[in-house]
Structures are given as structure tokens and as C-alpha cells.
Length: 484
Image (cartoon, rainbow, N blue to C red; front, side, top):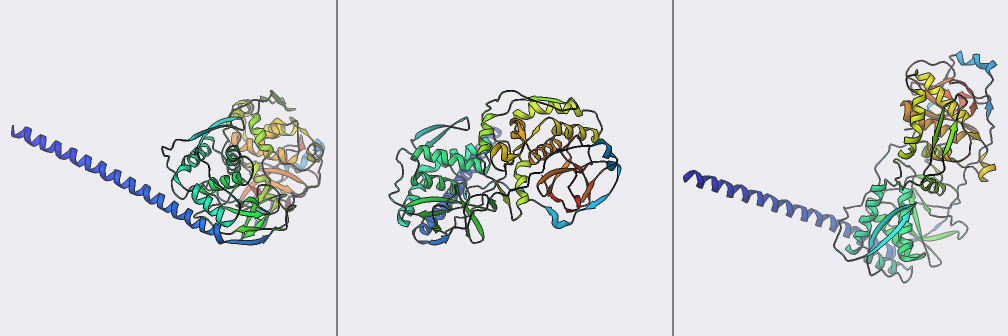
């Protein structure tokens, strides 16, 4: 009996302790959530005060045009000059001619976690690049009577209430689930806002609000009662006027330089805001809508058949062009570092992997180089598109024509994916090629890049072997562009 009493007492003690622990955890969680909410509320209150008074006139800086390259035609390799590839001439590259890239960083995040609530709401169903999505938004919309500072501040406070949290939560969930890059997310917010509010100032305001709550850097601009959203970024976006505020460029979503010389801008910053990036670090998981079957056959006999995701091609058609930092040669990095989607890999890579399986590294690179050199038809962008246009790797596989930059981007992608070798882009005036870092000595033209030997591989020098530089290109003055 005594033993039972002791056991019962211990059991009650353990249960009480467990309940006490659960209660303490629940209280801690509630307190933490309240602190998060209080911090976000304070940030929104602070920003609404900026909207009332922190407006200044800024002149629009002229649009930076997309760089125009001289057209360098492809060259067919002459076997009689092949002796050059046995040379071991060392062409060191000065450090100033190596373009490094920023370290990849996580996407912006809200200043505090966005928590779902039990609001009874409307449901918005839409298709975004062929992908069906559903979003919740309040039954009662917000009011934006005009674009005066007071009206904007009042509308911001109205949107800051918890009833819009589910919309923000759903937007961020879609970004995570579809692995959307910053541009895709910005485009999604525009689609949602215009679906809810129609086109106009209210849609711009709602898009900007969700964008800021998601952690991004944004400024409002006003001209003649028209509201504009300006996106902060360390990139230079071509062909659109912009503003410089506190050393950061802010771009509108469309060119406004023909509308006005300047605009009133709210210069207030939101807590922990982060700039927009052109990087596409992950596959964009849009619903797969297959194109017709495409066959790419090289002179060597290596053949690959594939269907490309039309939804992804449509997305790339509207992707902005620009470069990071101050050197326009960086513009190709966005394309070259973008991954192929899994649907395309599953169709393309088995055939290429079969061709290079079990062969020496040099032979494997040679086969892939010849495939890109001879399985694609060359044509100038001006003739096909009316202007210069770089392709993402999937676009080169989809469209019937491509040029030197497109071939180099595609070649760099498949060599890194299939062989795991480092590749750099080589920029000559009017021409783009690549160089590959092998694991063993390989003859031909090469460059020393940070102590490593990169051998020239030119996808536009038709039929040329590894180590052959296209005539007219000088490796001593080439600019090396590092890739991930």
C-alpha cells in the first residue's frame, strides 16, 4: 500500500510537472508571438508616419540602355591550324579583369513571422504562368481616396491590421512552394493585386504593401495623382529611368522617363528591408506545359530529344535584363547561373550522360562542346528579335536559333551539371566564350585564373577542339567572368 501511495504521488508530480512545462511553453510562445506582432505593428506605424510627411522631389536619372555588341560571326575550325592546340602558352589574367559575383544570400524575410488567423474571407483563384493558386483576402477592401500623404498613411494603417495577414501568409507560402525568385514573386504580387483591386493606384499600393511586409526594399513615387512603386536593387536594370536615394538605385516596374523629369518620393525606409535581386537560384516550379518535341543532333552523332516547359519560356520572355554592380559584362551571370528545371534535365541529361559515360574527362568535354557547336543553328539577335537578347539555358534548347552568348551560357551549365567542372565565361569585345578547369593537364590555349588553369572552349568556333581560341580573339585582354 505504501509503495502504491509513493508511486501515485510520483505520477501526480510528474503530470503536474509536465502540465507546468506545457503551460510555460504555451505562455512563452504567446509572449514571443506578441513581441513579434508588437515589433511589426511598430514598424508599420513608423512607416505610416513617413508616408504623411517624408516626401521630397527627385529628378529621374536617364535610362541606361542595354549594351549593344558588335556582331562577330561564327568561324568554322580549320584542321590545318590544329597544331596550335599542342602549345602550352600561359596567358595570365590580371586580377582587375576578373569579375567576381556577390555571395548568394537568402531571400528577404518579414520583420516578424506572419501568423494565420481565422478571419472569414474571400478566396481568389488564379493562374500564374499556368500554375493554379488560391489566396485569401478580406471581404472588406481598403480605402484609397487619393495619393496624398495622409490618405496613403491611413490606407497603410488599414492594411497593417491582422485581417491582411492571411494574404501575406499565402503569398509567402506560394513563393516558398514554387521557389519563386524575386522577379517572379514581384510579378505574382502584381497579378494578385490587380485581380483584387483592378489596375490603378489601389493595386499598386496593395502590391507594394505585401512586397514590403515580405521584407523587400521599396519606395513610393507620385506624379499627377498617379502612384508608382520603386524597387530598390544593387542591379542596373536596362531601358528604364531610375532614382538614386541614399546611394541605392530605385527602379519603377516600367520606364517612366518619358512621363516626367522627376517625381515626389517618400524617402522613408521600412525596418530591415532588403534589395531586389535578379538571381534565379532555384528552379521555378511552374506547372509543366510541354512544348512540341525538339531534337538536337550534333555532327558527332550525339542526339538529345526533349520538350521544354512553355510556362517557363513565357516567364523568361518578360524577365528584365541588367547587370550587377558597375560592369555590364556581369549581365550574363544571371543567365549562366540559372538552373535547368527538373523536367528538362530528366529528358536532356540521360542522352548526354550516356554519350560521356566512362570516357576520359577531356573527351567528355569535347563531346559536349561539339554538341553545342553543331546541334544549334547560329543567327544574330538583331535579325531574329530586333535587338540584343541573351537566353536562359532552356531558351537556347527551345528556340530554333541562338548566338555566341547563348551557346556559352548553355555549355557552361551542362558542363557544371554533368561533369562537375568549374567553368568561367570569357568576354572579348563582341564575343562570349568559355574556359573549363580540368582535373588533369590539358593542352591548348588557357588562362591562369586565381592560380587555376582554365582551358579555352569556344562553343561558337564550329568544330574546334578544346583549347582552340577563335581567330581574332586575344586571351591576354579577355575579361574573365566567374560563375557559381
